[in-house]
Image (cartoon, rainbow, N blue to C red; front, side, top):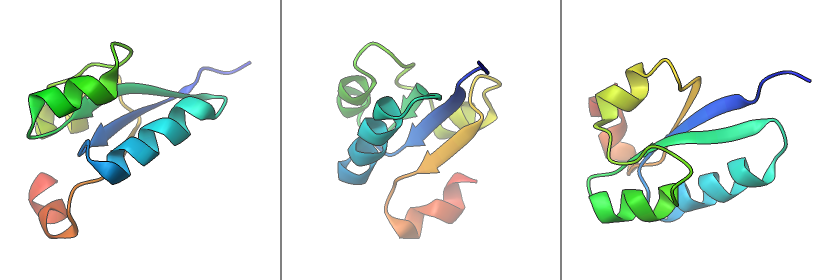
Length: 81
């Protein structure tokens, strides 16, 4: 069996929560980091199983994250990368 694909989520609102539930429910995927402007919301989505409270650039540049789900409002996407 191969190692799981490791995901990070930027934006922990409604769509970020949907992504987190989907990642956690599928075999071969692992949620390893989440980031949000609201640290409490980030911590809730992480549920102790993922790193929380990272700045977006740290999550994007993390060697532990292979795939980043950008779940912030569309107008903010370009500024994150």
